Image 1 (cartoon, protein in one colour):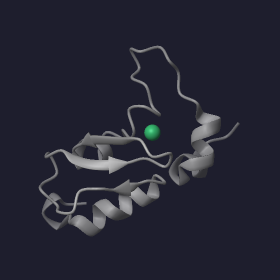
Image 2 (cartoon, protein in one colour):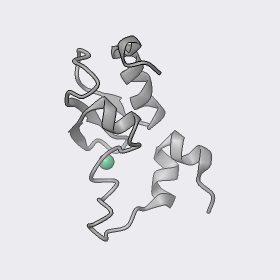
Image 3 (cartoon, helix red, strand yellow):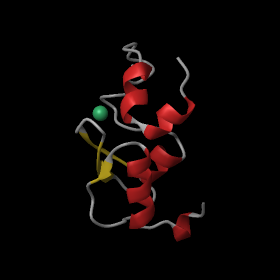
Length: 89
Ligand SMILES: [Zn+2]
């Protein structure tokens, strides 16, 4: 996946693959923050780079590793198609 060939349609497809939506209307670069909404409606800002290459998604649904909150994988597997595809209870 080359950076130069990424476009708004790719970001939209990625958001949908996580059960969410892309809120930004224009592609502004892989390392520029864009607005997103997760499956349960949290809005957040993140660069496509960190999401696609880092695997990150909504920071409210996925607390940081340092936060100690833990990830609710049962819940995520119900709303995030990507997680559902690989998660095993
Ligand atoms: Zn969320």
